[in-house]
Length: 250
Image 1: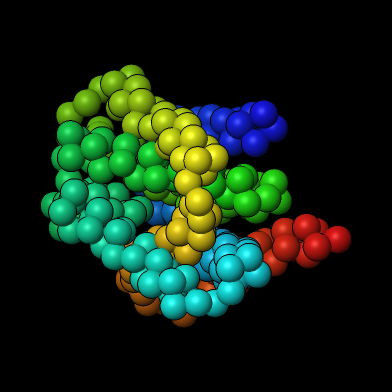
Image 2 (image 1 turned 45 degrees about the horizontal axis):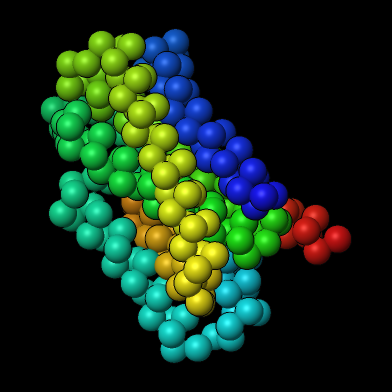
């Protein structure tokens, strides 16, 4: 019961992050771009830290660094590639414009809902592995969801939805994480080696998001001062995950 309670509380917190999009209306566009840029850096660092300091060590400690683990890791990368390529959904944090178009409302809601379903499965599975890994994974998901949800809210507004409708559909999409938790905890209790598959799959997904979506966005900023700040926030994200590892070991 503790695993179910912790998992559901975690995904409700993650789902509530979808409402943060309203902040985009209160911040000037220039300031918003700066904030999102640094948050993207922090998010990339947190995801890399989550992979290499938590998820992979947990999988290797439990199952060894076998060929299966390596293949599931690669499969996680491929799954997120398919999400972007065929569902036309991506982790993007740049405001919508003529020069930088986004998929429109329906496509974005469907793609984001599928991604949130996977997030829920990841969080539920992490709690099955250990409470500390569940907390760490939830934090990593929350950190990268903040700029993502702000971007999604902007996409829905750009597509012509009212502020209320944009918030509602964004939140509805976020609640798919609850279904993901239910699926993950139900499967995990009945399928042998479920965690041997899910942990490296999650690691592969996080690597793809951080390396293929977030880092390229950071390269679009060329000024030395802002690039240096991005680097600092990238390192800070890694350090936060390292700190959680130290606390857990303690």
